[in-house]
Amino acid sequence: MPVPFKSKVTFTMTSDTRTAAHASSRRIFLHRRVRREAIIGWLFVMPALVMYAVFVLQPLVLTITYSFYKWNGVGPATWVGLNNYITILQVPNLIGTIYNAFWLVVWFSFIPVSLGLVVASVIHRVATGQLGAIARTVLFTPQVIPLVAAGIIWGWLLALPGLINQILKIVGLEAITRAWLGDFHWALPAVGVIGIWVLLGFCTVLLLTGMGKIDPSLYESARIDGAGWFREFVTITVPLLKNEIGVCLTVTVIAALAAFDIVWVSTAGGPGNATAVPGIQIYILAFTQRAVGLASALAVMLMVLVVVVILPIQWLSRESAQ
Amino acid sequence: MRVARSELWAGRALLLVLMTLTILPFISIFMTALHPSGTVPGGLDWPVHPQWGNFVTAFNDAHMPAMLASSTFIVLAVVPVSLLISTMAGFAIGLLRIPGARALLFLFVFGLTLPFSGIIIPIYFLERAMGIYNTRLAIVLPLIALYMPFAVFWMRAHFVNMPTEISEAARVDGATTWDLFWQIHVPLAGPPIASLGILMSIWTWNQFLLALVLVEDPTQRTMAGALGAFQGHYATDIPLLCAGTILILVPTLVIFVLFQRQIILALLQGSVKG
Image (cartoon, rainbow over all chains, first blue to last red; front, top):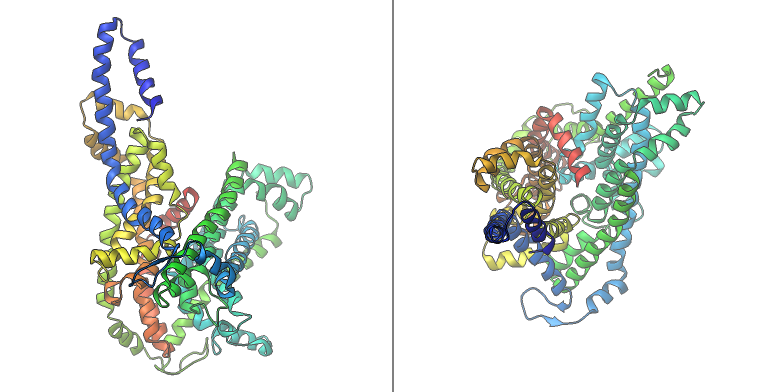
């Protein structure tokens, strides 16, 4: 039991009792009560804590342990120290998944958040009433359906006879049509477009909600000073939305770095390793190539990467919001 | 606020463009689904003879009733248990302020950014050893645990803001800690519990990785997991794949349209707090 809690309780008790003897007997009684309550309180936490410990904390420790071994998942494991980590840093196909993850951040995060900001600021004053309500629902739909479905739908749209190429033909860009997800250069941006489709609506609606909380008189006075749309955007909208922007960035960056569903369904990491992200490579290494140690080392690197990228975003957005 | 007419129209136009881009993919797969099975139509070609039978074929081939039942079972096994144990933990940490509450909160919050793929490997081996691999329990148990960081954090945020007078008054009346929890604080926590329930139901229904790794039989999986298996099965038959995808999306979309206000609110709040 931490000391401050106990001492606080005894302090308040002694201050409102008169005689020392009385105080000490009461103190023992209260001590017992406090202790009993602490035990009951801990019993309330136990079910959640036990589940969390068995199926999250234990696997977390095991992942780190596996990462120091060479193991095929069945036979005996051999201690290899940091060799798995060194392998990942040296093999282009493995370290490449981390580069790809950062590339996806551009598509899944920067574009939806910045585009979402612009779109939200343009529509926030017209998106009231019926149109606004319908727009919210429609734009939010991709956020509700399984990412697997988004992957399947876009896998077809981006195929050679699919909708995207059909539209390109109509507007006279037949020369650039291709099987987007099968093209070494274009597969990753094509997967990125799926991410934009899924996340843009979410960011827009979240930012719109934030804009609704900004005092309209701020805009009025900026107008009187002759500020245009862009000045307003930079000096009022963005600074006052720091918190919401931080949330959008956090959600979308995690979606990019930890991407699995969309990529697995639309390209499975291909062609070659063009769209392989850590999640995909972990799955392939562990469950088809049986390189459990190597897969675990990549898993550890992914988890560290997410924390390292997310923490600064959280600090910046929280700090300025206060 | 006065808004210039040109700005009004620009805003509306942008909104319409954005909505069209969001809906167009759904329209495209719907039209594709109506083409004869086995053909490769263009993305927006209107079928000459709409093949409504494709939906029947996909319904039967995908074992839709079994998949729906499996996914519903998993949601019903995961969500109530997660709600109960996370509310209890949030109550103890946020309201009872038990000794060690700060450390506990930190321990749970630590799990918030954890990608599922980071710990899936040991979960696979643990479940093989426990003998629950390839059963629905293989998805249910880790999912409950993986929701704990967010769920406990969420419920604690509610309880930490509850005025202490309510608890003190109940204590004076001789209520036990369980009475305090079950008869006073759970009824008062209705809205956050409902939002959390909506969030966890959607996440469970859409959970893919756990289903892919831990359960081989598509009829024992979540809806997203079953859809993944369906894709592998119909990779070469685009119209049937589209028909199956639409069927699998229908329950989600119907529920979304019915409860759109609550769902959007829950998802927005969920991301802001998390």
